[in-house]
Image (cartoon, rainbow, N blue to C red):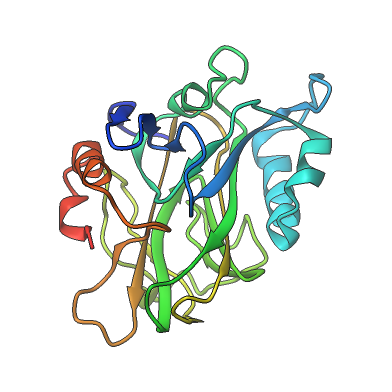
Length: 254
């Protein structure tokens, strides 16, 4: 991606004695999604793949988001040793080098042609029809119970098998979190209070430069509009962190 960025966004969570970055908590926390950072320039043995950003990444992303098989991706590509554990995804437009830094892979993984895959179980606190709303630079794809419900990638109809009418203005919302492109609304889907739900999220930076993604959720019939999606209750530390990450966050806090 290209554009102006913001800070690295790392702070200490007093309540849980761990660090949080834009890419997740530094160690395991209940009810979060486990994130793995992949380097698509390098195979699992550390040798160059010879892949090119726009020639190979769309196909990798299409294949991966069809089944979201992280072990299979690890057999093909180099991944950071450290996992992060995310409850929410508010990653303002920022320097792509913040991603390897958050995963303790600075100097090991060069910040281009990289992707972070997050997977876990979410237990909704409400029953109803919902849709995601967000944007990614370059890729943001969300699956619920094995189905893609949002592809809010920088270029639509390129990185997944989802197809949308790019010219339909109802697909788009506001420009938020420093992104020069507006948010994208996903498909409606059902959630049931207390019923464990598989959530998978793929974010990816293709050419290098700027990287970011933000994700909200909206309940049908709600007057409050979209709110920041989170898989566990937000602590005061979480709220303080989000407000510090970007000034847009406060008005979308649940």
